[in-house]
Amino acid sequence: MYPYARCKLTNDIYNVEGNDVHVDHADGNRVNNSIENFTFVINWANIAKGECKNYEEVEEKLTKILETIKKYKGTRKC
Image 1 (cartoon, helix red, strand yellow):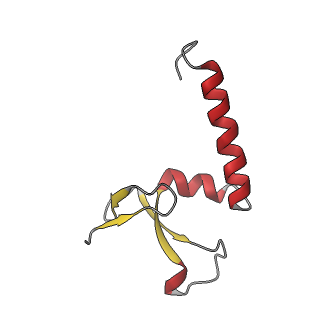
Image 2 (cartoon, one colour):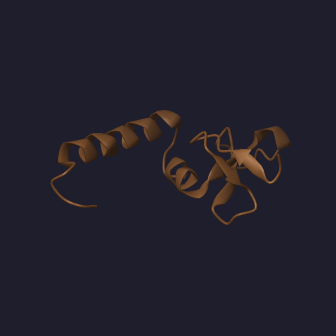
């Protein structure tokens, strides 16, 4: 279905020819350039993942953000 691919991190489908899609090292090892280690991800999700050491840290940080948004929802605009 080129040029569309499913983002590994968000499960949404994106046009991979756009500037907002990155190629990601699935195992986090930036020197493992085997074709099986590459996946497509949307840029903001890849940036968030890149700031963390592992998926557990990604989950922890995103959970904290979601809890804060829910806590203050309706009290102010983002």
